[in-house]
Every structure is written in structure tokens, then in C-alpha cells.
Image 1: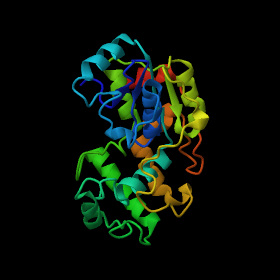
Image 2: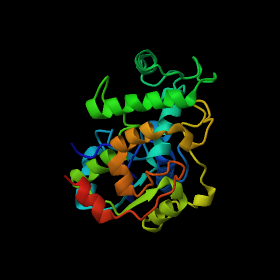
Image 3: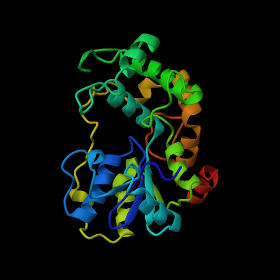
Length: 272
């Protein structure tokens, strides 16, 4: 299986396991800068040079050798499951993507037909009941993850522990896992542990939120989207994420972690 979703600087200074919807655009740009002295002009996901990515055939043996030998500092970044699934809904379901089309072609029409979801019209800008539509989307997300119907789960709403775990299960080991909610502290730890051809000052790094502006603005506080049933569904889908990455399941209004991530626990539980 190898190391899907893994990026590495061309200098092999650092290895990063991408977790979608967890500041991956900003992290990728910082990595790119440390080797190239400039940020990539465009979405870092579109960069085809200046960085090793598992998606490139030529990069796979280089990444594999490095990760299995643990030659470089390896890290990943996680996010509160409540805000992550909400962000996925507004970006991927309600939003128009950077190619000018809906995400995954017929996905949104299928959701409208089978789950009664509204998305704010053709341009995603119209008024609609965000809470009702999000809760219906949550049913769909659960169906894809639990039963792989009506389709396989998408990387943007599949559990973070699944993404993080492939790296461990295939022979990798993390030196650091941090929270998007404490991004600067966590990313500074990474930078403090690597050699950079072009040093980065996090105060000067723009936030490369590639999903910003794709969809409608969230009209309510996070907690208003989650009633008892929604919280039950979220726990069913993301139980391991809450436990391993120390987020507060009981209170959707609290996006901050409530404990420290135990790397030994992560490796033990995700190494199956």
C-alpha cells in the first residue's frame, strides 16, 4: 500500500502525512518555501515539482526509503471533528470548486435527490436551511463510511485516524502531531526540528485556505448544527478521532483540544 497522502521536501528535511481539511494547503506551502525560497504560485495541491508527493511515481521509492528508515522528522496535523465535517460540507457540497464546477460531478445532484439536501442554488450563494441540509449530509457521510453506500467515503470527511493510520500501519513513525487550532505552536515545533535552506517566520506566512470562498458562509455557531442525533452520528463516525487527538465530544462549541496527544498511544492503536 505504501504511503498515500505523504509529502516530503525535495531536500528530505521533513515528511508530512496530509490530512484533508486540516491546514494542508498552508503546511504544504511552508514546506515548499523551505526548499525553494518562495511560495508556490497557485494551489499547492497542483504543484508537480519542487516537492515529493506520493502521487508521483518517481517520488514513491524516495518517500518509501526515507519513511521506513525514519531518516527525516515526520509529522501530521489534525482538527476538531465537528468543525472539520462542517467545513467539508460548506466547501465540497455547497461550494463551487476551483475548476468552476461542483465537486465530484454528480455527487451534489445525488445528494439533492436521495437525501433532500439544499446547497444554495447553482452558484452556492442562495439562501437555504443550512442546519437541516447539513444534518442530512451527515447521514450521507455516515452511510458512506459505515456501509460504503451510495459511494465510498470521500477523503475530506473520512476519519482523520484513517489517514494518519496508513502511515503507521505501513512502517512510518510520527515525531509530532499537532492541532490546527494551535497551528503556530505546532508548526513552530516542526520548524525547530528541521534544517531549512530558506527559513520561515510563521508570523509572515499567509493562510493558504484554498477552500475559502468556495461556498456559502456559515450562518450559525458550530454547536447549532449538532443536535443529539447529529452528535450521535458524529461520534459513530469519529469516535477514534475524538479519543486519539483529545477533542471534546460532549461540547461541539469547544473546538479546542482537552488533553495532550500521546504519540505512543497513536502508534499502538493505529499500527494494526
